[in-house]
Length: 138
Image (cartoon, rainbow, N blue to C red; front, side, top):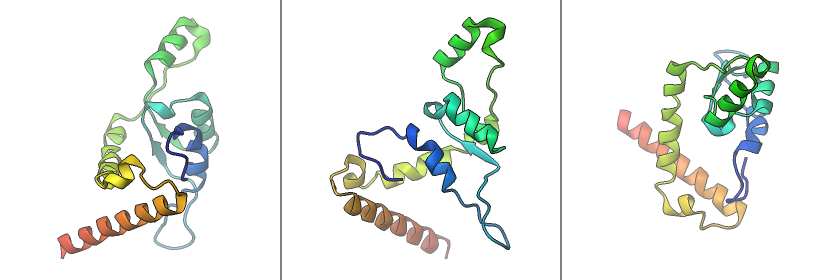
């Protein structure tokens, strides 16, 4: 999903998760991943309810203010949110990939104002990263 540069990513969470396709050895790709790892920005009730409805494990830590509000409500606040710390640590792979993409100054600062140009730059950067990966293992 390509959004305006000043827009937050969080509102696009459900749209992005709906577009996920997990390929398997045979057959069509699954549309439901086993788990979704995200940072605290995606820790909203709506996102968690959506993942729970689809039976997807949410690996999202709880924000401090959300935890404080829950505790303030006492027994009416519900149970604390849990997440798999081991799976959450693997999220750094995605973050490192974003940093490699942002190594291109034009992508990091969003010099390309037209969505088509920016998306073309993303595809080009992704292709170069993939080619480097192929040549480094050969």
